[in-house]
Image 1 (cartoon, helix red, strand yellow):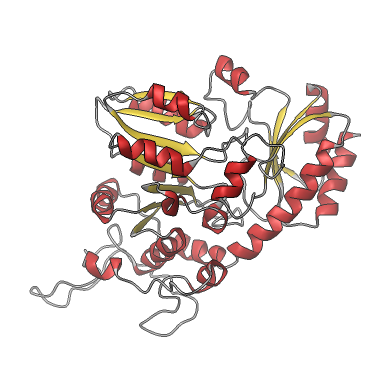
Image 2: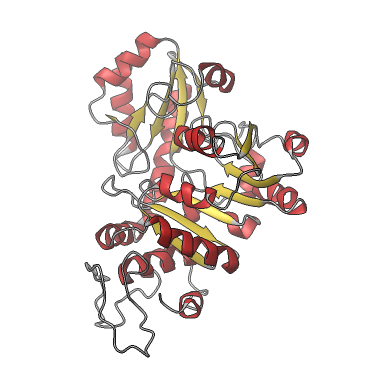
Length: 392
């Protein structure tokens, strides 16, 4: 195992703006060769120098130079002390949930990714972890839900798919007053638009598959921590679980992150145009986008982020319209996932949120006429034209 002191004290490039940091990463170039494209160290193990020497690399399940460069990069971008790159977004969430033990209580967003809810409901609860799923934009409700054994508050903001926004700074204070860890899923906005650790959160998780990778070509998850002591615990757990991201996938992630700033700006620019167009369509009953000034949590968004992102959900007038849209789109692709360069649309009730009970879905507004749109980086007019022809 590499000496963790070396890992924590890497060059943080503190004077650079984030749009520069995404390009130059951790070390940026390979320190061994000077290669501008960080090498793919496609190896399972490393030669030891001598029995009395502690070599920096030993076994790729524990540490690999390519993955390490990705982890350094993400720690820089999220302004944390340690980062861990694992093999999916769910692996990242699982790694964080491993900090809980039987008898602990977790409070999480009610409108949350279905896979996260499934893990809490079908795995953690079976193993003795209690949970409550509530609207975390309601701080008074959060205070009332806290128990003596509350050890973690898991926040998704904006939420998937109803685009609710939670006040990270205020939730962090509430959580820390009771000694609970505050975890934020930052998948939708990425560190380009939102940095939860600087707002007081303890841990950030990402489905790196989405905006960080950005090209729908890799599965990855990221965990970033503020406290190095928590990092030391997660480091050992990652070794035990064998969840570390492979070198090739780590390299693909590094390449994707280099254009994160450019992509996020284009996603947002397009999303604003598409969201405003959708609001004017007779078959669209409601549009959910955090960039609307009349969004109930717009003030919180403006306070804690530098942008609104590229995710939109919208409700249409009937299942007939849903089917017409999904069957007739030509540019926008009916597919799960989000955050790639291509525009993707999905039907949450039948795809991403099947794990949520019908009663809970209805209460949240995740009905059969709700669609979620991940706005890509194509020309916005082409995206709108495709949606328009599909609706007719």
